[in-house]
Image (cartoon, rainbow, N blue to C red; front, top):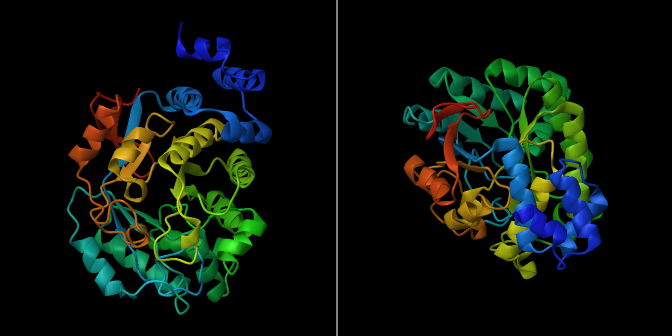
Length: 376
């Protein structure tokens, strides 16, 4: 008897959970109410089986990584979010890199790096023309590299500051050499929770609009959630539903990345942090519910290398990239890896140890190298 039959015949699960399992195993979409039930009532073995089934249905036994580096232009920010340990409001340090300094970083990257990821705080004095110049200089320095840059929160501010529409802003950024957007800044979409943790930040509707317009302009993006603070499961599912609905409309999201709230050095430290078991629960339910987003990423600098490897059994199929100790966003909030760097061989071994096949990808999930000959 296989694991799926064990679920459907087990006396340990309610009929409603078995009905959900039957829908998932028959590749039918579950409802928001069913996702809430999974969060509250399904145990981890149950969730692991279903999430792994969905993952294999979409991506087989393959798990992805890339060779990337982060550039964080500044932590000087117009916003003062209570969960943030990164901005100059909370941090004991502040920085404001020049374009020349950032371009020099790119110039010194090894040839193996295929992606530069540029995100930072929302600087009050920089508009889209400044950041377009940065992208243009990076593109001139490394014509072949993929440039993934700017959260929706950054995009919204820099476009408004320049007095432009989103479509006009994207035209400028694309001409300069922008390839895709990361998914940060989404936090949690529920307006009441958002008011508590980041009341001054852009609205959930604005975040979704920035990504929808990006997709309409041929710019693929990722998407995220910040979980494990003051939200409830219902808020997480509402967030996932809004993402799933937008993906139904645009098909523009490449990957979903759950981001765990880290409690060090911020105004929400009193909340503490959820357990690793809750992390795994969240990965699994996300994979089961987001049936139309092809990849689920565990951001290993946030949760640690071993935890990221474990997440591969709960629906995750992507461990991000090599990073090379180039990000401070989570290390300043107390992440397990204070000096986040991984070589490609170590990433591949983490994937192999989890019983999966490592695939080096580019930023759009085209295969570069794998333990097998080619993408089937």
